[in-house]
Amino acid sequence: MCKRQGGQTMEVILYAPDSEQSGVRERIGSLIPQRRVRVYRTLEGLSERLHRPVDPETVLIIVTYSREKLSEISPLRHVLGDVRTVVVVPDQEPTTVALAHQLRPRFLTYANSGFDDLAAVLQKMIESDRRDGAPESKTVV
Image (cartoon, rainbow, N blue to C red; front, side, top):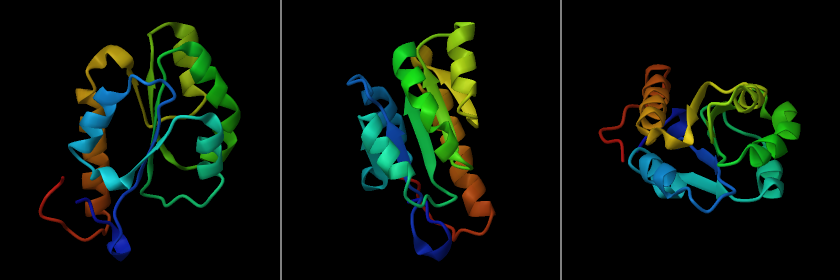
């Protein structure tokens, strides 16, 4: 598990409004226990979660397979604050990329990437949390 200060475990908030997010969940599941991944399929659910306190070690992963779904998230950018955010966009069109950058992500990747890059970034975040004072754990599940 990926432990952090206080003995708690890192949480991943996954916003995936489209049903085709199994590839992302697989990659996340190889690093973070499923019980620590909170999946939101509706903007209302995500908004409700983001209006509650979010630990600094929490990672928000936004997965959209259409520019329309991505644009629906834009009004929430003011509540993202310092939440570590990763955005998966449907294409490399300049309009789509610009829209994603409004969310101030730490990392931006594309839906057709296979998610290896997403897993690598998530792994680095886990390792960074450990170096920054979280207790060591023997295994990343």
